Length: 216
Length: 336
Image (cartoon, rainbow over all chains, first blue to last red; front, side, top):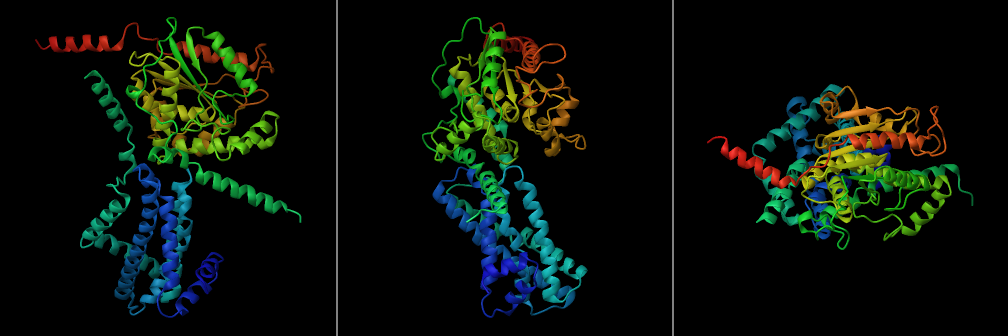
């Protein structure tokens, strides 16, 4: 089975998607392909940040690919945290590849992340995709780990909490490094808050500066 | 080989999706500086000095056309007659109608574009009344959505403000004088005006009044920059109602939205001129259909617009800089 077959199987609601991933030996190539593609798609969808920061076209393209790579790093974090929660709460140990397969399939909805780029509709679309991804993750974890609904929801939400905890504590240097890599690739310090970057008050200040310069 | 209706619908939907996805690119690319050589938005101070205004000019009115437009200064016959009649009724006013608000790089659809040949064909069909012409409306509608988007809007709207400022400069607006500017936005042009308002206000330091003629408006934070927003809505105009429905900020359920706060402050005035539709027969610009009082729809619209424009703030009697200087001197004396 190829990554395309797995995606089609997922979208048509067949369990063959997860079975194929669980059955494939060796490196989790298909899960990584899914996550990388989803990362690239979501990066394109949210590329307004790069435009707003006036990144050059060449750096723009490189930034998209680097974002996709960082996204894959986030996937490993997800797998690790859900595996920890499943092991601690429900004694599902030694099931890392099953968790990886289930979590990777929950990234399939995010393959449509490029739709975030749509004007006005983009913001609600990405929220809908995240909800779909969460529901998919619960469904796939249930199947892969033999959990009931409530247990799968707990695993998923516990994993999210675990990630938040790590990001707020020992993960801070990693986040710092991640941001520096993004800045380095973009060729400038990226302002990630569009509201701050494009605040009309900045325009007012710039206009006032021009007036002052003219008077001087 | 026959093409099934499903294929045609699929192709149309695919075109719509691709067109919608590509619609923010012009504004974003302009902002990012990817399109070198195209019209930029220089701050006024950097530009060449404007031509002297006519001595009897009391106000400046910029008209931003609706989404049926394909090029600057090229209007459909009905709209052209409307602009000529409006200009005739306001002899002391500079009426600016040569702004194409759906391209912040100020490139006509039929101008220097890769698909200019396509848009030329569509525009020629549009002038003949073909439904194919609606493709232009759709293309421009996506630009209105870009303006209304909280991510892209601040970028697009700065570009929109630059277009208006450049047009004002071309028509001899005396920058720094505080001369009021009235914006008339027809249909989607209303949203572009609204989005551009805070940037215009910052640059002009003059009162901005907005008249929305059946405008499709979102709850844009730019509403706080206008002195007053007059929203003209005909009772048969279902197009302007799209804004009420699709933009949640305009729902009464959200009292803290920019729109609802402005309404509560009395900054928005809804004008209901009668049974007008958005466009075409019985529309605001229809110069054939007559109302019960004997006026044509166009005449009634002109009466409303002229009345509103004359209610806009009068131009300052003397230069603003002197006034502010005198005020600052007074403020220095007071503590002594």
